[in-house]
Length: 116
Image 1 (tube, rainbow, N blue to C red):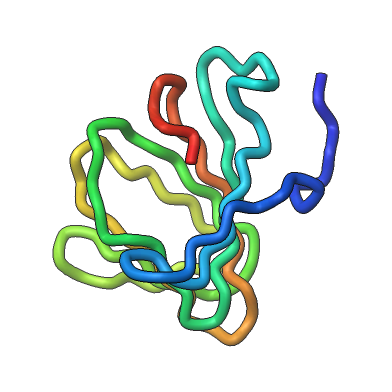
Image 2 (image 1 turned 135 degrees about the vertical axis):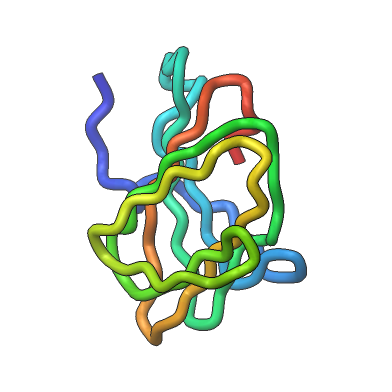
């Protein structure tokens, strides 16, 4: 069993196009013996955003804190603390911070996908 606070994991920082102001952490992954899923936690700083992209695997997201927007099917939708997202494989998507506080979310992906 692994028990830890997510911020104990050192982040990987992304701060130039196509992603800006992003800190990503693999909090549960292959090195922990997780055979089916990988859990990542992302923090987007004020005005931060993930790249607009698509990939063959699905992922599930839980919004932990902050205010943001998600791009899907050609439009932006507001999301905030407590929202959940299911993004099927091959759907173009992007997430951005729409507030002044850090936007924090957990993202689950299947094993075999790049962990970060």
